[in-house]
Image (cartoon, rainbow, N blue to C red; front, side, top):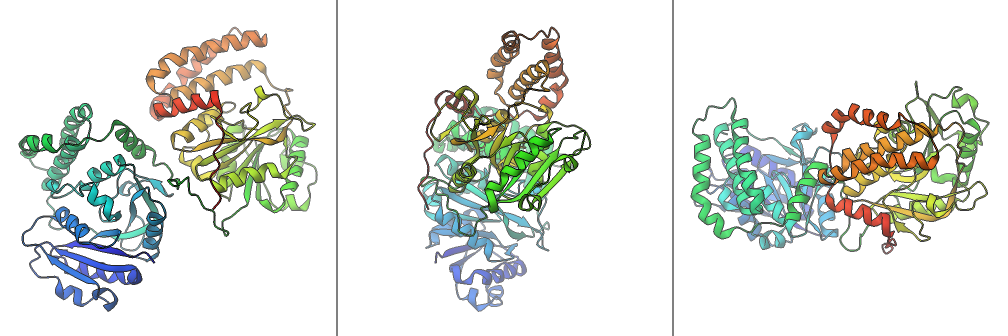
Amino acid sequence: MTRLTVGVVTKNRPDTLRRCLSSLALIADLLAEVIVVDDTSDIPVDAAIRQIPPAVSGRVRTIRQANHEGYIVARNRIVREATTEYVFLMDDDAWLLEGACILEALALIDDHPRVGAVAFAMATIDGGPWDARMQPAPVDYPCLVPSFIGFAHLLRRRVFLELGGYPEAFHFYGEEKSYCLRLIDAGFDIVYLPRARVVHAPHATGRSTSKYLRYVIRNDCLGAMNDEPLPVALISVPLRLARYLSMRRGVADPGGLRWIVGDLLSRVPLVWRDRQPVQWSTIRKWRRVRRDSPRWIPHGDGRDVQVSESASRTISVGITTSNRPQRLTDCLRSLALLGDLVSAIIVVDDASDVPARDAIAPLPAAIADKLTIIRQPEPGGNILCRNVAMRHATTDEVLLLDDDTVIIRSETIRRGLELMHRDGAIAAVGFAMASPDGAPLPSLMQPSPARYVCYVPSYIGFAHLIRRAPFFQVGGYRELFQRHGEEKECCLRLMDAGYDIVFLPDPPIVHHVDPTGRNLKRYLRTVIRNDCLGALYNEPLPMLVFTLPFRLFRYLKMRRKAGVSDPGGFAWIVRELARHLSSVVRERRPVQWATMRRWRRLRREWPAYDRPAAA
């Protein structure tokens, strides 16, 4: 069993220290040692330690600082004194609710060498979560974070010491960000476990707000001067100083800004001598992680994803339909091939003239028992309906189908699901389209012309497997599009969050492409409008300036090729883009340049999927 050292820094808080140390009885079997650093308390901590359970007190070693040096210096000392590979650092006003959270964190960091630190969620005294804004990330899934909160965190001792530990010049506050930036620069991840809750009951008494604000901004500026590339620091330090004025409102501290600037200027020679800026790519990754809270994908030793035998291997199926009851019936009946693989079937009826529940033919009991039909009160488009199906799904993986698809071989879905279970980096699997006789359609109508399993930039929406967590992490399908083009836009955001899209060329799935009822003018207008909107929402601005005009004029080329006369189409598209401009400005989150380069490469090359080794 992996054992760890627990470190606690304390000063003049014997009651909270006693509660903190007593809670360690929950993990007594994991404890190699508990190091308590007394930062010059007025009353020594020995009395508090004598009142904790013997299973913990027998492992406590106290170190009393000769002078008050602050908790940052004390934490560095704890890690140096520790003898185990992993060190769990706590504030003295934090305590454990259960031992499982430490077991989970310890297993994670022990199994995955690229994880450099584990962040915990803050819980209130009654065990409930703090406000999401007070957590390392505002999400409920394990994710990458740019930093942890120092009240409770798990570290790798060797890595911590190699990177120089916490910056002792900070004295108080902000040391976590500086260390985590260097940790990311060294190639490690910081993982946040939102279900691993540790109580934090910070004492407001004794804290000077003016002093707190001074140190927070001073240390933030020092961190930028020490760690950021010079062009970034020259811009960010003045912005941080201006932030102090914004934070100070309501606090009387007229000399605060002068103190911060004076202190920074006095440290410039020392900073310049010791400065070791991180790479530009580290700054970009840090900002992306802070913005997106990307789901943590276990990888590092060949994407070492392992699926336990008890893991759920069933899927939900979501089907969107509108006024095609016979096609829907055929689609539902084909699901019988999947047997017990399907645990739930959700049909979203986009306000058909005759409700789908009344229009479909009788179904086998094995299908009817799993079927839920959700009728939309008014037409919203298949994109909205797909999001509804995803919200009602009950499994981690969901198979989304158009109502005019028919599954002809169960191994198609089983192979796709096996890929996803073996590789946590795969967010979606696309399938090949077949004609009604089962023959694959021409390669130009497929996600890729490759006849091997490969990475692709997008799938075709008629049939695809997708993970719910990444789907909702990136916001799902953009309902503004209503119809057409949502797959590419969603896949671009999935790739930017670190996921892969894989194409499975065989066996194909039948797609009854039914042109009846399709208004070609409306189709071309909507396709180009949505392609332009996707660029406006997602592409870096310099790229957008060049690509948007090409997308608009592509409409004229497509219209001419289709032989469609639609003189008002171009003006309609431009008006639509102008109408949605406020939404674009508000919600625009451009992807990284690296994502755009990879997306274009995948569209051109279709590299073979490098299947991870079996567990």
